[in-house]
Image: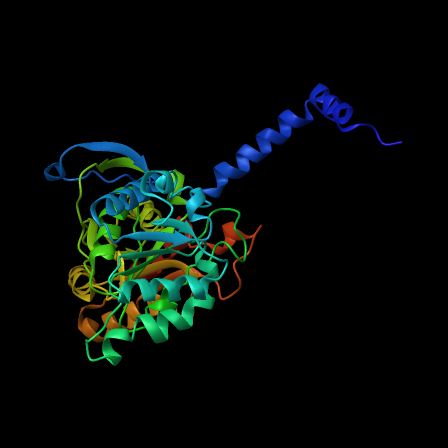
Length: 373
């Protein structure tokens, strides 16, 4: 007869098995982060700050919006309970169940409902629980939200709609909880697509999306939810959309990324300086659509070399659009072909995630190709 569970656990404790398993689990989580987070320092003009991770910054932004905009509503799967990542924690208790509420498990319905609210004049903030599951809503975003203003000759619009959704690698998400689908949405005129690199950026960019007169899709890199911690202004502030930021200046190579990848590239720039003597300029694109080609091209004119990196698959990833534009605008300034370091053209793997992601060593090899061409 099988031994009782308590007896088995007691034996495990006695032999130290549980302790060793705990060490292995901790090691796996430690290895999940393929980057070192580089915190931002907010400008002093924004006043008092408090230490927040990305979840807290998102929560603070939503709280601020609900408190200052009486038409604002927040909804999605499990949102009333705080959300699976706790981004809406306590907001129902604070602002009421008629403004923060759960939706049916229907991504198409969530976005369609948001479009109707926005057309009616409400500030609609819809949450899609994972970006991997946003595709059932693709028709509503593409054929309804993005075209509403155009097809009505600007008589009607749903510009007060913002769709939030977590995206990207997380260390253990596998096929259905790791995707980066931003390039799909970059092909849709009429919406804006934004991806922050940390808490300070997230609050300012999300407030800009919520207040922008166009529907926005706001991707949140989920690996940063608790791994990204920095000082964030407590007051209301916005950061400009469609404006890339030069995070680190350099003269030899331009490195472009967004979201989590910016932190990978900052580490790559440091390694390239130490090992290759190359000065790298790192740019955070921030807004995928409409994107800031001027800042990228200005940098490439200076450095003559460009590497673009993202977690999404290589073929038709947004790096291809950047490369095509830079090649057209800066052809005579280029010292070498443009390098793209991206995910492979396969479904996102589970145990092979470390081999799939465009980590610092793959990016460093890309820099070597650029300088040795």
